[in-house]
Image 1: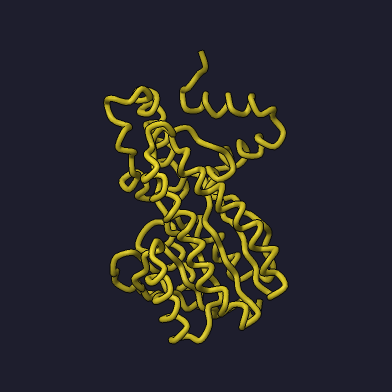
Image 2 (image 1 turned 90 degrees about the vertical axis):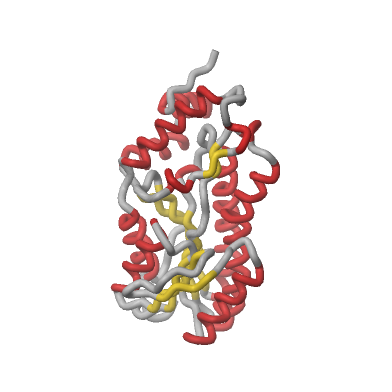
Length: 274
């Protein structure tokens, strides 16, 4: 990509958490940053905010058009908007699953399709897709969340090969646990209540997950990685961010027998086989 300083950056899901940390840090470092959120939000000190609902084609298109009209280009897109759906696979309705994928996967697809024509015309650009360590290993009671991130991983691997001839890069950032409002914003499937056959195990896992999230890295750790990528000339396929123990445990999947790795994950959440 062209000069690494003063890039025009569009960040989805920037009203809080990782997205807000990215907008603040990139803006402080001399980049022109536009953050987005589903509902109108005030501008930050170093960035502007736009309304964008990534589940709606017209909303995505309007926000991208605003940035292009004001700046004439978009150099970097950070696809961060998303949420976590929790519940046993059996307890998740098809409609709930659609909502999860519509935001976490199809939302990214909509944004990519909206910005790529401009990036191809300028023969440069960077797309940073915020995935998760849950996009590399399926997590109990977060099956649809993991599915959305697994899909995002495959999409990004394909996308980066297709856009490379146009001077465009695409990459994945896989955070582990991050101290954000994810615990307050997590959506539980409607069938995961007292009548669920999985209720006891679900609550045990949820308690462990929320404890780990409370001890996670700050969102600024992810923002620092995104800043480095924004100012890099070349990027790899994926980057992990988080506590070393979580990053190492993910590496274990590559060399441990699959059943052994599965048992390791289950034991971390207090689950066991009969």
